[in-house]
Length: 234
Image (cartoon, rainbow, N blue to C red; front, side, top):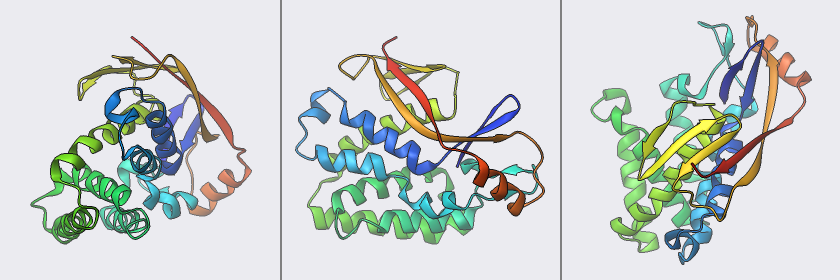
C-alpha cells in the first residue's frame, strides 16, 4: 500500500493500482522501442502486473504498531516482502513467461542492495534461478530482457512519482521527472501529448490507529475515489 499524508487525512493507493497506471503509461509510449516492439503486449502486461504479488497484502492492509498508522509498502517487513515477491514472480510464469521474466527482473533489481545479507540470500538465489529459467523458456537474451525492462522500470518510477507525491525533481534513465501536483512533467515527453489518467484511491483520517481492527473498520467505510494525474512535457 502506498500511504501519503494529505493534511488531516491519509491517501491510500494499492500497489496493483499503481502498477496498472504504469502499464497504462507504457500503452501510450510513442518511442519505437516500445511502440514497434514485437513484445509490446507482454511489456505492457508486465507493467500492469509487476506488483501483482501485493494483491493479497493490500486486500488486508496492516497496522504499523510503531507509528500507529497503515503500513507503507516501504516499511513492509522482510519476511512478508519476500513471500509476496515469490508469489508475484511465479503467478504468470506458465501462461505469460516473458512478462513473468520482466517481473522477476524487477524483483532482482528492486532488492539488489540486499545481496550479501543472510536473510535475503535464499530469496535472491530463487529469483536469479527463476529469471534464468524464464530466459531459457522464452529464448530471450540478457540484452533483450534488459532493453525491455528499462521501459517497465521507467513507467514504474513515473507512476510512483505521482502516487507518492514525490515533489523533488530527479533524473532517471535519460529522463527528467518532476511531479508538481497534479502533473508529472517529463523531459523528454515519450507520449504523443499531455494525457490525463485516473488512479483509484481511498482516504482515511490521519489519526493514530489502535490496531488492525481499527484500521480495517475505517477502510471499510472509505469510498473509492479517483486520483487525477496528468503527464505532460517539461
